[in-house]
Every structure is written in structure tokens, then in C-alpha cells.
Length: 589
Image (tube, rainbow, N blue to C red; front, side, top):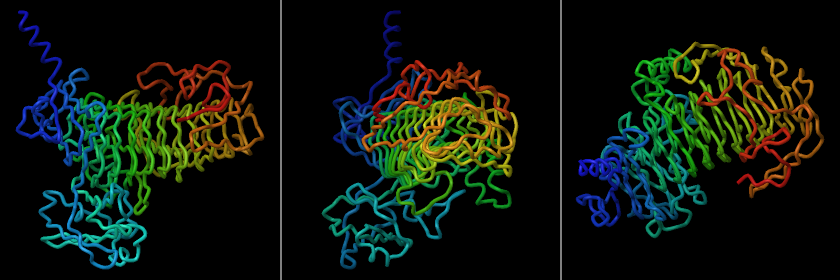
């Protein structure tokens, strides 16, 4: 009996498999006989096991063949403590020959790429705009930095001070031409994308996986449309219960982190059938997802936290339907859509469809084009304590959602703070340093859901209005843009600075003369504090119920909402408008 108990405890604790660049895949994964590849460890790891990867560079796509069984019996992939572990979707390319002065050429057999050839695969998909030129999923890197793709060899020759590449291929070989900013590529580190991901299951339903502590980079990702399978540099592939934490993730041709959709409910259905509009197609995708069991039991409930995510040309974190009930917190996301060689919808620091009961908290997002984009079915969503700035499109775009969703204690400092094409939002204790754009959307009917569920309760168009604005500070913009919305706002305790204008029916908004609030490059913000007798403690009961859904404002887990803490988590004493409980010199990061 005692022996059985001891053996049982070993099973529950799980095995630890070690991986090292000095190892061999014929090893047993012990510290003395480590495996050589993470993929080899993945093939043998079972629920409850931990894969510990030691220092070095691993050029592979990790494709987990199974997941864990529960929160308590996960499969954990982790970098060894204090060791730098890099997973790359690229390979080193040598043998460059000078084609013209400053322009180099290499000939690569197509067999080098195996089953996937990024330099013959063009980016394509629903809502993608190629700007009338081809783009490949492949990329060329000089000492870790991507060069610029051009579709004309002449531009490689002309753009020697930029760093550009051009590709052509035939049935046997691929021919790459590039300039390397005056450097000899054979004396530098030159890499090219060869894999479509660094960490991604080939099948849905690989649940309860943890990925922590890695440096992941270089992936030939395809456009992640909401109607397509969304493959990211790292992605969950329609699974449940992943934890992605403490990683640095960068240099994806399209999406860095994907919490997105699988393929069977539709893959780029609009471009394949343009007879119907994209909104109709996506409604059909939603219904097909429900038919195969889209629910809290099967997908979502992920945690993405404490990651640094950058240099993704489509999105830092994307997810269509598959991000439901998740938490995205304390990530630093920047340099998204940096090159701007192509464009389209589905782009931003964080871009989610169906952010049902998703909490987005404590993230810093800047130089991302669009910061946060909550598109369709943001219901029960809470966006709290985030800092956004230097985003050229807008900080937050809420598109055709019906509420209830909550935006509180955020700092929005880009030129456009909020682009509101939704209704039923509650905005509490925010700093809006830019303008607000309000627009109805009567052309599209989009779903709303039963409380804390993926189950569709109905469809409706977006009339606009029916928002709540309590205890916010507006600098140079204001709520006047809602004056002609059909449904009225609830407003109370707001402060308007530097010419910001009130909502026409607002009785107690306070106008303050002063300079714009400026965020320093070091994250310092001087907060003067705003006293306002009308400001009071706001709760979910104060916010009421959203017009279309008939649902109240509460936490994602159904608990009561009370906005008694500020952006830093500090308890509010006397209630003051804005995201900070006290005036003073503040450090936001």
C-alpha cells in the first residue's frame, strides 16, 4: 500500500525532460543525457511533465502532439532559469556572391525549404490589402534585423542605404538578391524564414500548455484573418487553458501571438465567395463555431502575461473567437505594423474578435498603429489599467459591439484616444489625451450573447450612444461628438481640459484651463489632480444595463464591479476624476 502511494505521488509530480544543444535526440531527457531538440521532448512529454530547455539557439517549429489534462496537470515548456534560450523559425544562409556592386545573390535549392516554402507563398486573406504589389511570408534578416522586401530587382539596386531584398524562383531553385547596407553578408549573420511558426499545434484541442521564458523570433506567418485559421509565431490553435508568460516574441511577418480560430469553420471564406459581404460570412463562421462546440468548456481561458512583443507587421496579439474568457496582462507591445508595406483590417497591438469576458489589464502599447481593437462581440470585456501612446491610428477602437463592456483606469495619449463604433460601453476614470470619434454602424448586424457565455442571444445593428462616461479627464477632445447619437449617454464627474467640450446634456462636467498632459519618454507623468464635487464612487449598479443586451456591468466572473482602486491598484480615498488616486509626479513604467 505504501509503495502504491509513493508511485502515485511520482505520477502526480510529473517528469522533467531536459533539452540542450549538446544533447542528442537518442538521449532519455535526463540532466546527464539531454535531448537535442524541443520537438523530441514534446513527442514524449505527458500531462504533468515539464520540459526544461537549456541555453542556446533552437531552429525548429515546436508542434505539441498533446496537451495537459487540467490546470494541475499541464505540460510546461520552460527556459532554464537564468539561461537565454532562443527558438527561431529561420535558418542561416551563406554562400552569397556579389551580383552587382553592393548587391548580393544566393541560389537556394527548393528542397532546402522542405514542405513549406515562404518565398513562394504570397500573403493573402480576407480584409488584406497588398497595396497593389506581392508580399511573401518569407523574410531576410541581417544580424537579427529584417530587411525590406521589394517586388522589383531595380529597387534593391537603388535602395542600398535601406537594406532590401527581392526573390524569384523556378521549379528547382530560389534566387535571393539583397543589399546589406554595405556589409559583406558572408561575414555577418544572415538568416531567412523557413518555418510558418515557432510554437504551434498542428491540431486543435492541445489544452493546458505553459510556455515561459523563451526568446522566440523569425516566423513566416500568413495573414491572420478572423475568418481563417490564425497561425501566429506562437499560437494556441483553438485550445484551452494555455499560459504564455515571460517571453520575448518578435519578428513575425504577420501575427506574433495568436489565440485564434481553427480552419474547419472557414478559411478566408470571403475572398473565396465574394457574392456575400464579409459581415454575413463572419456571422456564418460564428454559427459554425457554435455547432462544433465553441464554449468555455472547449476553448479559451488563456493567460498571456509579462511578455515583450514587438516587430510584428500585422498584430502583437490576435484572436478570433478563441480568446474568450482569457486574461492578457502586463505585456509590453510595440513596433507593430512598423514597415507598413501592406495593410488591412485585423491589425493592432491587440486585435480580438469575440473578447467575451476577456480582461486586458496593465499592458503598455505604443508605436503599434492601432493600439487595442475590440471587433465584434466584446461583451463582459474589461480593459483596465493600460497605458497607450504614440499610436498613429488610435489607442482604442471598439467596433460593432453591443455591451456591456468596461474601459476603466486607462491612459490614452495618442492623437485619437477612442474610436467608438459601438454602444453599451462604460468608460470610468480614464485619461483621454486625444480626440474621440463616434460613429453608428447601421449596415451590419452583429451578435450579442447570453451573460458570460458564447451562446448567441440575438443580432442587432449598432445605433451608437448608450455609453456611460464617469469620472474621466478629457484633454482637448471631449464628448460633444455624441451630441447627435440616437441614444443618450450617462455622464457624471468628468473634467474637460484645454478646450475639451462636454456632451450637450451634461450638467456637472467641470471645464479647466491648462496645458496638455504630456508623458515623458521615461514614463514620467506630472498629474495635477482634479477636484470635482460631482465625482463619486462608481459601481456596476450605477452603470445600469446595456440597452441591446439588457445585461448589467459586472466582472468577468460575475462579481460586482466597484471602481475603488486606481491604475496602480491604490485604494481611492476622496474620489478624483482620472486614473490616479492622488496628484504628483507619477511613473507609468
